[in-house]
Length: 380
Image (cartoon, rainbow, N blue to C red; front, side):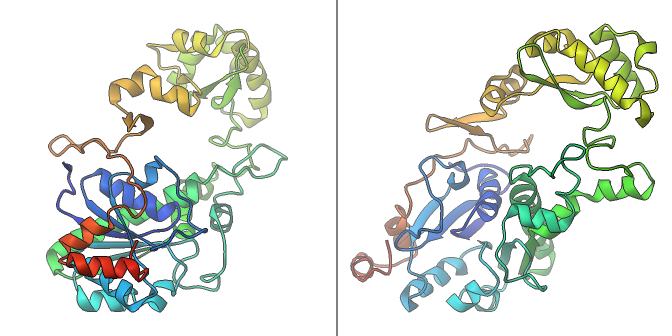
């Protein structure tokens, strides 16, 4: 049974790629009832695989929304929803008859959530692109990397997920709060360029006061400073060092067994190469796990760099229940945690389009009509 702070919220999701499903997953994790509308027949451009965490905790129907009858069924589901989420290029849902004007005319309280790379307008609105393109244009990619080397793509975490799906979920929740007073729905236009740019807010602040004025990989928080970087250990693994403050640096120096005078002037960029070499040489003398034990109980801000598999079993993550098993597969747990309305454990992903009959029956569609629609290819 669903539980969590969003219990009772109804969401319809039009099947799409990573950012939109991620936003939907977060809402579903927190208790929202989600119905995912897919094509009646699977499309080659939508990645789907068993036990995909991005499709957990929702039911899944298949409708041919290009047909009049399929579109009508989709609209009937949307009529009952609080939120619609779609991640197509601008104009696609309008051409299907499922655009904001179509849906809000029937359901004035609907929150219509849209996620695209470039946004619904602007010169690039209809251009193709992926995470790397969006964060490049947002100014979020250029600063990431080592000195003298190419910018390094940070997977697709900044555009698709942080600046995309997470931004859309936040926008939807804000619109729901506003609706509680006005009674009116609205469109939430989430752009991954906008979101990735928003994630660089602190970077712009540091630049404005002259604390981020060096090249890529040569600044305080991009690996340039010896007190904020990763270091290789004796076993070929790595530890992360984040000893920014003076007292944390003092603890780190003690854990490493260095003399403070040998690594002084840590805030002077001219001394960073020398200090880094001394820190690196010491850290290479022990294994990653040995350093973790030596740093335990201190404020040295030295922690192991774990693989995703290792992260699942780290004692802290186990204690916090940061990961859960869903149908025998480990994956991140719902977050954040709520004291009074905790989220239930996620439900295993359903087989694509397997809930069509159940959902349409709840919608009031008679059994013989469901059979006719299936035979005609209107539903899965």
